[in-house]
Amino acid sequence: MKPVIGIVTGQANGVVPQVVLSSAYVRAIERAGGLALLLPVSAGADSEVLEQWLTLCGGFLLSGGGDVAPAYYGQSPIPQIGATSRLRDSVEISLCRGAQQMGKPVLGICRGAQVMNVAFGGTLWQDIPAQCRGSICHTQSQENRSELFHSIGIAPGSILAGIMGNTRQECNSFHHQAIRDVAAGFMAVAHAPDGIVEAVEDEKGCMLGVQWHPENLEAQFPVHAALFRWLVEKSK
Image (cartoon, rainbow, N blue to C red; front, side, top):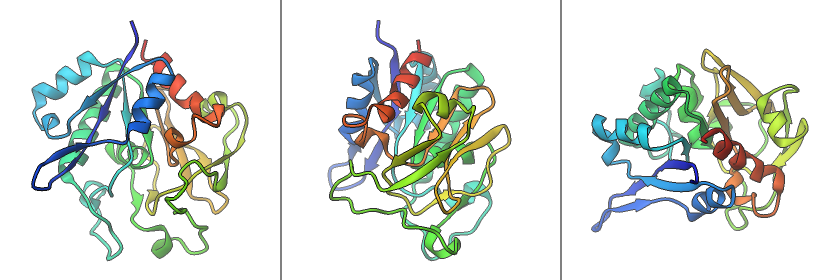
């Protein structure tokens, strides 16, 4: 049987409330040999449902999305903060902690990497242009999400280096927030040329967060597809 990978969805609260998730995440999991199971964020507020998710799924993917509420890392919001959802924050933080306790792998993408860091006590830069002097641009045009945008340096000997094959890569970039203080038990294992953290992993080797969007690159660049293969293989 294919490993089941749970992906928490976003939520659009319009006249007709909708579950929201880019199909690129599902495609990337399927191409890596996994079975994607969508987990509606509204259901995850129920602790019994969350426990069932942890039982049903072999691993989890935390997708991109809005900003993490600063209250979860002990800060007040600055004017540049974007839209937040404390419901989604709470569900994904609880899922991260539960998965680590059960030894189940988690791949965090963009916001997902930030949630992962916050879940274990780390903090974030709320807005890179406002708070990080001398930073490069981290928000490329949305017109071509499969376009490589800037380089990253990867720590030798890290899990990420083993997955991606070497310590110099290129990635796309669609974020205005970033990891600031790395959570205890985690390591920063990739940086942009300006020093912004681009990836973290935990000491147990089950949790990996990347700041870029490999789901938009994996079809063209096998090195980025390897991230999803890692998650699927770890979930068996």
